[in-house]
Image 1 (cartoon, rainbow, N blue to C red):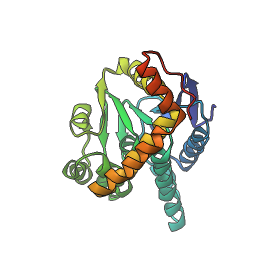
Image 2: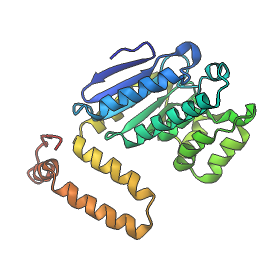
Image 3: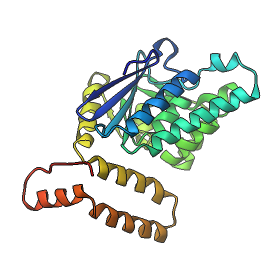
Image 4: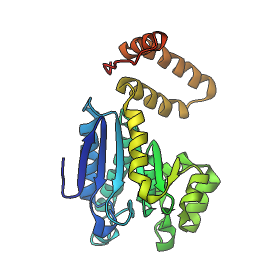
Length: 259
């Protein structure tokens, strides 16, 4: 798929979605958010895809909402629609049946930082920078706060939100916002290798695991164990679990059916 705002490339079970508004630092216009959400919906039903990578074109990953577009509108309903659309997009990433990796270079700010925090995994160039700078312009990053406060410890999240300052990639790694740092020249290869490892697994198993991870986080300890015990039972009954265990016992490579 090639869209004027979004490009998709599929390779061996990995769908790479590239935000394509380089002149605007890939800021999330209404149209880009809608295009990304629609493509994720399509991927959810595409059984050939087992991992998704979201990256940006040009000099940076994503600079957040398109403030010029928003400033051109003054209606309350438009603002509500914008932020609801963004919230729906982030929830689509969380509910997607396959893992999502954010590939970050340049800057990831405001809703761009929200994208990083929302993704299941994030790999960043070691010269990337991150911020939730809304407080600097009188617009607190309240919706990015939802994802950020779930990705890092509360005090680290509040420091980013209250100061609006850019932090470097090392600091983002230290607080758990990103999983790995690599030289920018190695970023494509590092993400491809990580995505490839994930895509080599059973899609059904990945789906079960990702959904269970999200559900159990909100539960008390005993309820989380009870829920995940049932998930293990469900998982054991799948064709791929039976195949995988048999392959392990017999020292052979499993042949996934993704069922």
